[in-house]
Length: 75
Image (cartoon, rainbow, N blue to C red; front, side):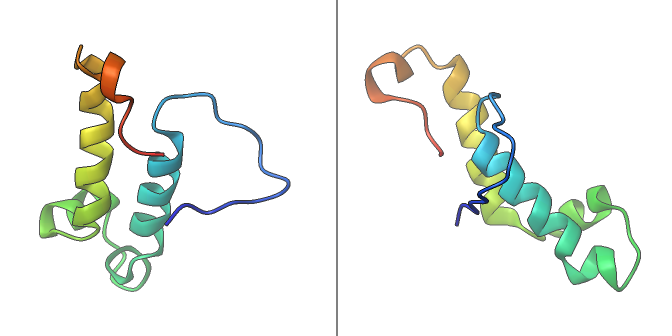
């Protein structure tokens, strides 16, 4: 679920779309907003697990030499 904004600055880093969605998921989760916990604590509890896995796969694909043929994972 990438989020697109018209006035958003372009982030040239790799896996920028997943990074942004992962960050938004953590910061808007009830664990952080209502309970006042740190995002790292919410990760340990298993919140936003799908985006965490996708972000990990995207970062890992940067080191994978086969990605030259398959392309980078993520968006």
